[in-house]
Length: 589
Image 1 (cartoon, rainbow, N blue to C red):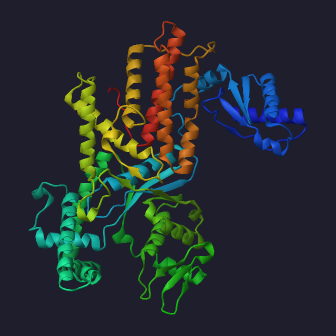
Image 2 (spheres, rainbow, N blue to C red):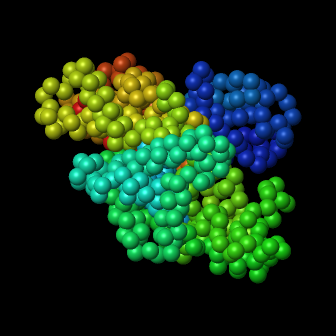
């Protein structure tokens, strides 16, 4: 039942009858908490066609709706806002129509295919906290887009080439003594990351020595023996030297194996991986084609540029004088290649930090100028950095927060808090460990995803595992509480259609439940998991108010059946919403 359409038709009818004018559209919004009402009509836009006092106009329309719309029982007007109170029948009809809330809010299909890129780490280090915001955002947005009706491809481009991995390779050759992850007892990504840190430590010592001998800092950094050696490895890699390629393959394999463990622990996956070693030559042919079309132009030195000044941006280099590609050239080619690989894709979402905002403005504009229809559906899911109370993380100094260590810390924190609550004594050790994992990871993901992506985050592990407030564990605890109620209830009856008198707290829960499909669509349109997270918190708050003020397992069979089914619906929506965030919910806590 589309209440807005019903009311729109009747309000247009009212205005025509009362004022002899025709409205083009009616604007609605959710009634503010401090006022009585279930839906609000905004009167101010009507003043374009109706001359008069907005309060009196609102009262006239309100009287008309009460007389002519069975679902409207009463109203109040606050300034230019007409707040309508709907009768219980409307809410119960909605509840009966949905009946099973398992897939409520989920659109099975109908929209175009989208590709979402996230993670995309470098092969010189393990996954760390900075990556985790990227991963959680991208994975959740992929889930949300799918729930809103799109077909979704989840992908990443792995930065497996370049000077960064050559630094780790040089350090391993010089100081590794043939060590392997098995011998070291370390995940492969951690071992390679340790050698990256080792390289930077050696390089720093060499630079200091060169500076003390009278060389400038800039010159010292560029001529330090360790960097020159790493650059030589890169040249050998580009030339296809067999020994260098073998070492590069071996160390990258160590990293991939390590990442697989971390991705599995985080509960995320990908449909396709792209590797920079395979894509870095892409784009040159596209640039040359664009040159013929006049999208690009060539300077006297032979370099190729795109003039974006008329669009408010700068001129952008796309091919160097010697014909070699720059970074954006590869991105142009990779985007085109992805759509060629998946012809049904009509848009791409790039999950990348906000330091790359300008880069993606340029990339998207160039792809539009090249004439690709799907270029109008490109989105940069830009996000702020994650900070710690101790300060900014620095990868080359080894001061990043390793993802595996953070997962373990979150699980340990969840264990301590859960044991203090003392409600899981009858669980087996295996069940307890699984519970700690669900709570710990849920706390971590929710703490990061509840914040608008564009905002910077100060991450506090202990605060995130609090069982009170806007946290993952608080919502998980409510879900577990509902499961306990359901186990005790034994109620299986249907809602009696003759029961129309709802408690105000039941109405409030139903009103929030009804919003979920719209929230999913809005989250998809805005690429924002925060909308899902904070909706779920609002739902849980309303349910807890209901739980604390209404006897769910009432002696009245009709009340009992309805309240149990209402609780069931809330639990199902919590589970669905959290699944979109990549978070599990436990049956017991």
